[in-house]
Length: 603
View (cartoon, rainbow, N blue to C red):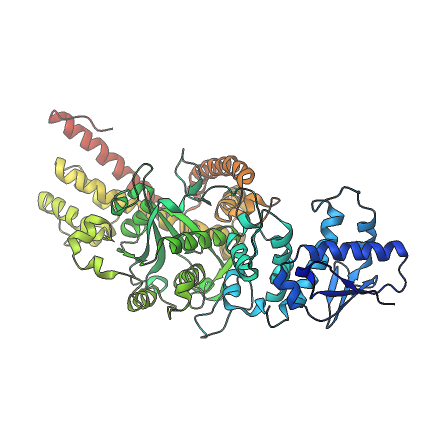
């Protein structure tokens, strides 16, 4: 026997649910009608009006394990265990009660599938919803989208990743039943609220947006809160290319021009460099050098990191000797806020794979712009190279590259950070003139073994010593970078099984990388807590936990460097030690020269 359930309220008039009462006791039939009434009462009017065909509701005991419901053509199948729990729940139970929540969730989930199939629905095929959900556009194939959703961290239910249709159903559950959804997934909340023409009260959201800075300096909290109102502008930050295969076309990043506390938002915020941050997609937190083969095969994770601007400038201009162009993007205040919100979602939820051609830094940055700012989704910006993305941004009038026209002004205002090689050459010219050095280029000087540079250091006057100290420090950075890569290959690559005697170092390295993994994958810090953007209680836990982990990471790193040095090949170990000796000797020599000249002693 079928018993028609038609809700009396005008908002529910179009929705017709028919419980199949055959085999149900009177109490079960009454509980079914109560459950359906409670579920449909929460639906927006446009949703109920779109479901204008009768839907039979049938309780089953033969659904697959962990499957609570099925939405067939005109029939909804539900697990009878949900009904049993619904009938035994406390009299005063609300939506937070597990049995109440489970039954309501199952009914709303299946009704979401029915709604999605209507002409008014079709949410799972809406390009904007697909952008927000994580089925991102593919720049390699015009109009196509990724088949895999990589927004797999801090999800309310991993079932949402199965397909766009399941994503819609799961998220409509939370949109209707979880007041915190508006804070945890604000862009999706606004999308559904606009689509249905409804708003729902929700608790106050935690202020701003939080990110974990993986390489925060000692004494600085890794957890950084950014208020979008303090972000004056967002620049496209391009690290210029060099001769290396993986770096030939540059590196794409976004620079956040954040105003110092107390400064009114305006152009002067560009002077607050110590507060500026960089959003950078990269394979590792601290790796500029990565394997070409592994980059081609997707063996590296691709995640969005927040880094201090100065760290990025030093990394590229001093170590990589690559210039940085900072090109302002013409986007409005609301668009800046949306882009920052999208970046926060990626930071906490995205765990992609790095592919040198198909999903590199340019592709990831393009997708962030495309998904974060709806207006930009309509522009033809897709490119697989950082320089190509910049050209498309310029042609679309989004990037203002005219700031580079006046080179001196660009350097003064921070639109261009020149590579240090020209500065190094100038310092070398100072030393060359004073000491009559035989080398013509600074590269030739730095290529000398450090022991052959050492005798010249003792003869330098005050000015030449200061110049040579800068060059020795640059040489030391190079040796440290090479040593780190050699150790990584030795202990984590194919050679690792030949070093049983280095088991203690290998264990220390793995422990160091484990801690680094927590800091480079922020969601791991909140593995058992909530979903989406972290709220206040989670932030308080994060602040302490991330600070403790960062301290351990730095301590392990210092110990590891001392421990692992003995496993370097002898030439590398000797070059590193000799360069450190040169730096120490020059420092002592400078102090002695200052003392002799009656100047202040250097420390």
